[in-house]
Image 1 (cartoon, rainbow, N blue to C red):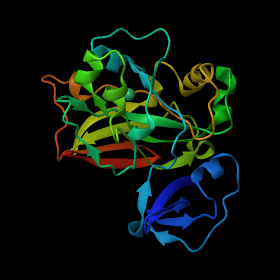
Image 2 (image 1 turned 180 degrees about the vertical axis):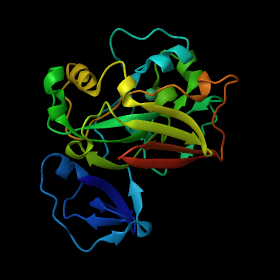
Image 3 (image 1 turned 45 degrees about the vertical axis):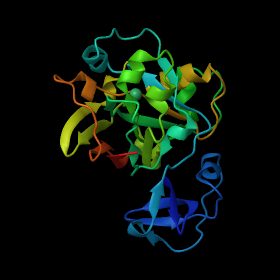
Image 4 (image 1 turned 90 degrees about the vertical axis):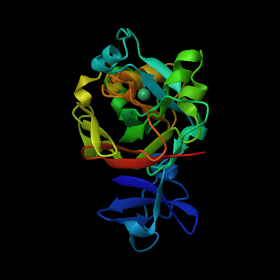
Length: 268
Ligand code: MG
C-alpha cells in the first residue's frame, strides 16, 4: 500500500494513494494503519490535485544517520565510522513533502541530503539484524536538511539538523512488501533541475536491517518512528567550490518506486 496523510479544508487525514487519486480512510491517523488497523475507505477517491500531501507520519522519534555512504564520508574528509552515527531529528523539523523549508538567518551554509527514510511498523526492541526488517512498515524519501556551519561549530546538532521544517518527507509511505530489497533502490537529488546525487542504496555502509537493529538497542522503536538512513555523495558541502542552498532554490529527492518530494527554500 501507499499510505499518505493529506489535508483538505485544513483537516489532516490518512489516505491510500491510487494512481493520481487519494482514497480517504476512516482511520483517525496514518499511525493507526501502521499499528495494524485495516484500511477502510471513508468515501470516494479524491484527485491528488485537490489535496495537500502532509508528512505521511508524525514520528514519535526520528533519527538521522551520519556518514552511511563511503563516498559521502570521503567528500566530507572523514573516515567511515565503525558503528552507525545516530542523531536526533526533532519533531519541529518534520515537514510536508512539498515544504517549504525556511532558510534560517543563523546559517550561511544550508545543504540538502537526499535519503531513504524507514518507517517502523511493529515495535522493535533489541532486535537482531536478521529479524529487523520484520519491524519495518515501509519506506519513503527524506531530505535531511543540514546547516553545515552549525554542524561544525556546535557540539550538538539540534540547530544543524532540526531547524524548523528541516525534514521534508514522503510523498507517502510505500509498504515494505511492495518495495522488496531496500538495498537496491536508486536515489537521486536535484537542485533547480541539476542532478546532484545519483546512487543506489546498495552503497550504504550499514544496511537498513543493521540500522534498525542498532537503533532498537537505544530504546524501543515504536510504530511510526523514522530512521533516515544517511545521504550519499553529492551534497553541496562536498562540491568544489562548495554550493549552498539559497531562498528560491528547489530541491527534489526521488527514490525509484517510492515517489519524489520537492520543496522550495524560502526566506524566513
Ligand atoms: Mg543525513
